[in-house]
Image 1 (tube, rainbow, N blue to C red):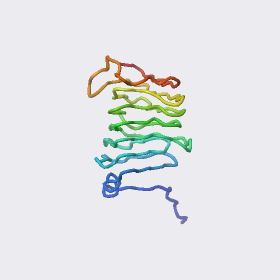
Image 2: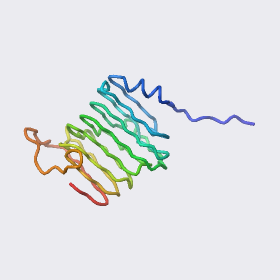
Image 3: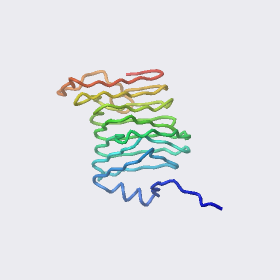
Length: 193
């Protein structure tokens, strides 16, 4: 019988993820999705800069995914399309600065998605992130852009923008200049700012 071809993929087990979490700077690139089949908690106090370059994130199963770092950047430099996930867990990016970079990114197969920038969420370049029907929480004291950024942030589910854990931001950030020539376009089935 003919041999079945295995798709080209890098599979990381818990031990490999633990080693990666101890990196100071890390770039992971996918020619399609970053697929998750079980719970993952990636990131330690030593992970200063993490770049995730791919079409998106797909959950398969009900595991919760948490990715932490001082600075996390999402980009899709190859412009690849993504396949849908079939899971129902949660997906959290937790960074000091979370950068939504160039290229369209999707998140699928998660019941809820949290994008947290403890200092700020910054849009750069042209692109966006679409989380489908997942509930989306943007948790940051500052949502801004730089260098003529044009980013869309889309969900057909609920969209919440919070200053910090559970609190709405009803004040301007003191001492932070507004970005002059950038735009962010958040949209959701329901929106709470």
